[in-house]
Structure formats: C-alpha cells, structure tokens
Amino acid sequence: MGLEEISTPGRLAEPGEGISQHELALAARNHGMPLEAMRYDVTPPGLHYLLVHYDIPLIEAGSFRLRVGGLVGRELELDMAALQRFAARTVRVTMECAGNGRARLDPRPVSQPWLVEAVGTAEWTGVPLATVLEEAGVDPGAIEVVFTGADHGIERGVEQDYQRSLTVDEALLPDMLLAYAMNGAPLPPQHGFPLRLVAPGWYGMAHVKWLTDITLVDRPFTGFQQATAYRFRQTPDDEGDPVTRIAPRALVIPPGFPDFMSRARVVRPGKVLLQGRAWSGRAPIAAVEVSVDNGQTWAPASVRPDENRWAWQAWAYEWEAAPGEYVLTARATTTDGEAQPVDQAWNRGGFANNAAQQVPVWCVAAL
Ligand SMILES: Nc1nc2c(c(=O)[nH]1)N[C@H]1C(S)=C(S)[C@@H](COP(=O)(O)O)O[C@H]1N2
Ligand SMILES: [Mo]
Image (cartoon, rainbow, N blue to C red):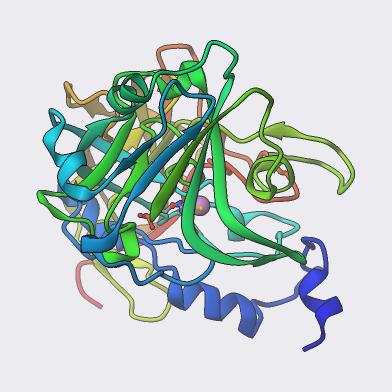
C-alpha cells in the first residue's frame, strides 16, 4: 500500500460496497459493548466499548509525568503520587463514540463501522481538572486548553500526536476529571493508563487517553482531531460545525435469546419486560418511548430517576407479545425538547447518528 493510499481523504462507500478488510481490522481492535451489558448500571471491566486511533502506548506509571504549561502562572510536572495527593472525585459517566451509528448510514462513511454499540458507563475517579488548572494558574489571555496523548500516528496523511482542546470555560466545569481509576481500579492500558481526561457529556473523542500534556493557549486549537476530523460536514470542503456533546439516544436491551448469525431475537408469547437505557450529554432525558412496529406507533416507557447526571438512565416497558414478527425500537426526548429521530441525520464523517435502533424479534411459542 502506497503513501497516496494512506493520504486519501475520508470517503463514502459505493452503493452496495461491503465492509473492507481495513474496516474489519479496525472493528476487531475497537470493540463495542455487548448490548446485554446495558443490564448493569456500571459497565463491568472489559465490556465498555473501546476506540483507539493508533497504538496503545506502553507507559510506566513510575516514570510518568503530567506536564501543565503554556499560558500559566507556573508550569507543573506532576507524577502519579502528586496527582493522587489532590482531593479525589468520582463521576459516573456514559461515554459514547461520536462515530456510533456510522455503519447504519446510507451512503456509509468508510471508517470504524459502529452500529449502535459504541457506548459504556464507568465510574471514573481522579483529580478535578479545575484543581490542577488552579494550581498552575490560568493566564487571563488563555482561551483554550490543549490535551495531548502519548499515542502517535498518521491520519489521512497527517502525522500527529492525538490532541484535542476544550475552551477554558468548559475545562473549568467541576465534573471535568483527570482520571486515574476506572470502576475503582487503575485505568486499564486500553482505556488510557495511567491518566486520561474525562469530559462528561461529550462524545468520546474529547476524553483524551494517555494524557501527558495540558497546554493553555491564546487561540483556537486547529489540530487534526479538532479542525479536520470531528466536524459535521455535508461536502469535503465544507468547514463544518464541531462535534461536541452527546445527542440523545435510547437503546433497547435485546430481549429473549438471539439467533447466532443475524442476532435477531426470539421471545415467547405473553408478558415481555422490555428494558433499556437512555442518555444525552446535552439536556437531561425527559421521556423514552417504545415501538414494537418499527416506529409506526409509540408508547411511553417508565424512566427510572437517577441522580447521576452524566450516566445513562434505565427505562422499562411491559410488552404483551403475541405470536408474530416485530421490529422493536425506542427513542429519547430531552428536557430541552430535543427528540431522537427515526431517520438518519447524515453527515460525511458519520458522526452522532442517533437514528433509532432496530431490533428484529420473532415471537413464537416454539421454534
Ligand atoms: N490519546 C487518545 N485518546 C483518545 C483516543 C485515542 O485514539 N487516543 N480515542 C478517542 C475516542 S475517538 C474515543 S470514542 C474514546 C474512547 O474511549 P474508551 O476506549 O476508553 O472507551 O477515547 C478518545 N480518546
Ligand atoms: Mo470515538
């Protein structure tokens, strides 16, 4: 494979074009969360989705240092012991990849081919980012905070460290964390060991893993992951709006038991308790509705109140299933009135496609 090939811009699949070996290789490295894991409030270790752009870097906790520099009163270099001496905070956060839903788009953007499973909920423990920024002293001229990971690679011909920024105002929000623990244990290597940013409510790309540098700057950051990737575009040369917070989504825990290849479900006639999760990084979830006829008719589900603002919420709906074929789906609406669509909101990068999930179900007394 030549350098021209790795330098090509993102492309759309031709009509009917299948998943390539390159996409399969991405999908095999970057796994989704098995949907039945939505039964847990907090996703057990190993079941949380995973997305790694380049390689998982090998980092030794003993020699690790977080550098804080740029427009600050004093530069900091903090080892893990220093980070752990600050008062710790734990936040339960549902994280979702901005590309979740991409492979369901038509035309399909060629990239990590997520269906609906790029999500997980963890309890992240660490130092509030604001604590460390206050310790360094943010210069009044600083407008953004740039976060750099230890991983390095090439994307569409651009060699880079993985980097993203937040505005200073966003960065100082109390739930922004420099996390060193996930579900009460040190971060696993693939989730950012020994330190990552956790940006509650934001799509995954903002939560920089293997964080080594925090840099305060006086102009908008224009790195690849900020200005080139993660923009909502209709055409390749459209500047596009940035991808930021998570759009509302409800998912159904697939009921009954699955067919191995198609993952279509089988349920028995009678009462079937449909359950699932709903979340949004924009405004809180106000309602969840369920449909068993692929979105033609909807019924309200009951949503369990949850004091964890950034975590998914459980919902339930009792379905009286009669023999037949069904397509189950659910949709969430936020307190701002933002309703999850049934149809795709298409963009070239395949970001934030929160079109309602479809779960084919056969209701049969016996096979
Ligand atoms: N340094 C670094 N941080 C990163 C990434 C990466 O490739 N490198 N991937 C981002 C993306 S696109 C997502 S969706 C989340 C995934 O986090 P997880 O693998 O812990 O679920 O990490 C983000 N942080
Ligand atoms: Mo992502």
